[in-house]
Image (cartoon, rainbow, N blue to C red; front, top):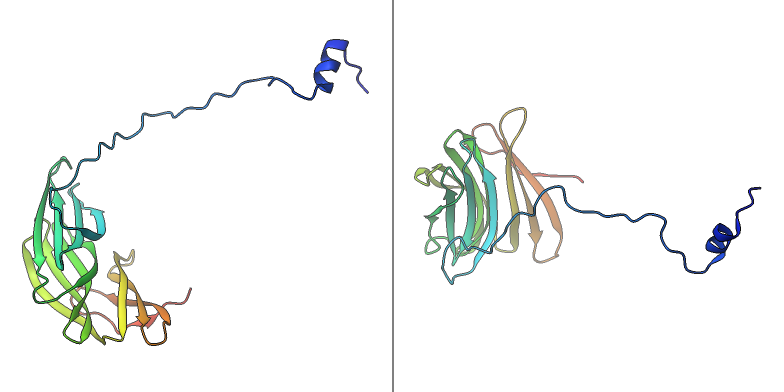
Length: 197
């Protein structure tokens, strides 16, 4: 056993001890200066944004606003953004959610869910990186309006082709399913399959 001198022993026995060392912690880099700049001055609520960075370095986003499907893309410096309405809510209202993926350089594929008459649709569209329509919207699947399709997500698989995943809710039983579809070309899609977790 070690015997401490009286000064150290009283410090050890004291109820309140001053720290032996002081730890100062700070960030290695400056914080990102989010100034709160808006993308636009529109008072209309924008919902369900989905953002990717394209191979050219631009930011591309798809979102729903006032029942419309809006594609928003930045310039190369990622400072200014341009909006393009690619699907109007007059024909498919409301548009619930959408996701996008870069199919090839300068070509963007978008999958979205919407209400049309008495059906809920899962649809696809392809556009250029600047927002021009390449192929018009086409349905992948139609569901009775007793189902809800939400949380749509699409990615390019590492082995090639595309994977779309979404939540399907039976509104009568409130049962929820995580469903998936695959495609090799973004034009034709497989039948839906349940995704086990």
